[in-house]
Length: 291
Image (cartoon, rainbow, N blue to C red; front, side, top):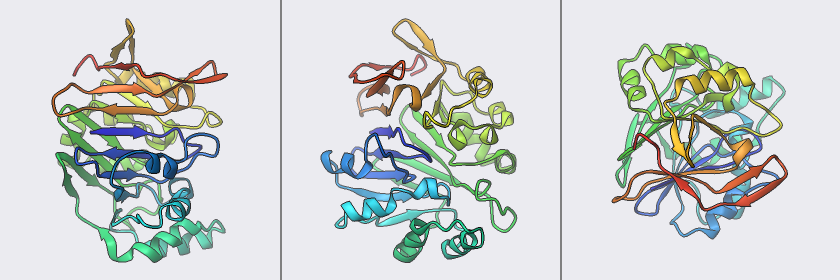
């Protein structure tokens, strides 16, 4: 099993490849200067995208959708996982009223209406996914309505929270099942690309991850204060005689987390950014001190 967190220009994208070589795409963002997601999928040997998890109905999180369908017309997403309380056509109409329509959202609504999955739980080749969401119209903000995805495979327990904001976190924390999932987490992907509006200290009353992961563009820096807050919540993992509490794609590039059936989990930094000047391919890997 492999999780690849892409180094994207904005939004978020992660690809999960299971032991049967089928895959799930979390978010559909893009990169203008770095790795192009359809190209990565084409040049690697797995069977295609079985599910698209739409974390947030915002342009940044769907920006790659039309390009994906253009380059992979033979491999559309058979199933879409989304917050079931939001109607895609309504979300698009809301963007029209705000004078910021996203054609990818309209494309998603037109092509996938009959393929929506509304279950809160699914399993594929040993990987368990569990989904939580706030409901519309109790919440009107697309950030608060982000779909939260918990993914578990053997020793790996990771959460993807889209652009969930503090109000959304506090609402979901009232759910005992949500609290139970947080207690298992050892890899925590910061919400809203690590920006302050996605930070909620109360989450870490239940969650003590080994490592915090932030996916953000170098042109949208995460403040030192927020990074320090996140670091204080992480137990840390050992790498080259040092202990790290936070990894940021804008600093080190794309990140892979992987585990086979018979090995311990590994973190692999495929691209290292040397003081922002060079991108080097590095095949080193490190294991979490907890796993």
